Image (tube, rainbow, N blue to C red; front, side, top):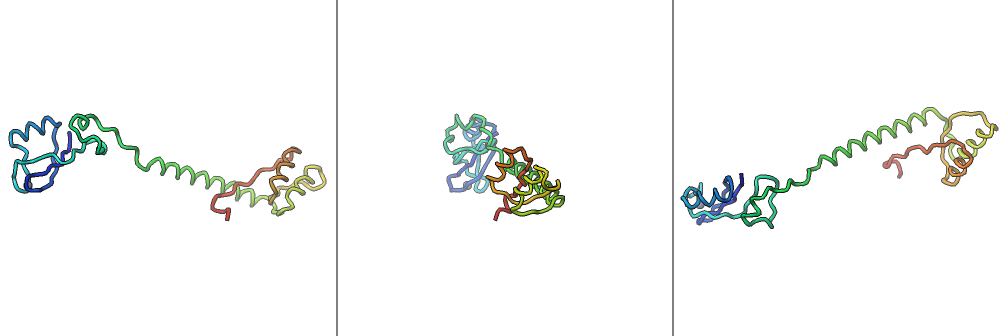
Length: 158
Ligand SMILES: [Zn+2]
C-alpha cells in the first residue's frame, strides 16, 4: 500500500491509499480518484510517501517509490537502555564506595604512608581509605601493596 498526497484542480490537498502506482493510474483514468472536498476528478499526485518508513525527497519517481522503503533508524530506545545500564553501574559503584568508606578509617593524604607502614608491619593492619597521588599509588603497587582506587562518580568530581 502506498499513501499518495493528492492535489485537486481547485487547490485542495488530501491523502489516499493505493495498492501501487498502477492502481492509482488505473483509478484516476476511470475517474474514481476524486477530491473529497469538491468532488473534482482532476487530481494529481503531490508527494508520494511509501507506507513503510519515511520517504525521502530523492525517491519521488514512481519506480523508486514502489521499492520497499528502508526502515528508518531505530528510535531512541538504545539510548534509553544505555542510560539504564549506566544508572545500574553508577548505583553499583556508589554501593562499593559507600561500603568501603563505611568499613574503613579515613586517613586523608596520610594514606600512602600508612599503607606502606602496614605492609611492612610497622602499623597494625586495618582497612583505611584516603587520598594518594598517582605517583604514590604507582609506588605502592610496584611494592605489591594492594590498593584499590575508589570509584569516583562523574557528578562528584567538582
Ligand atoms: Zn478539490
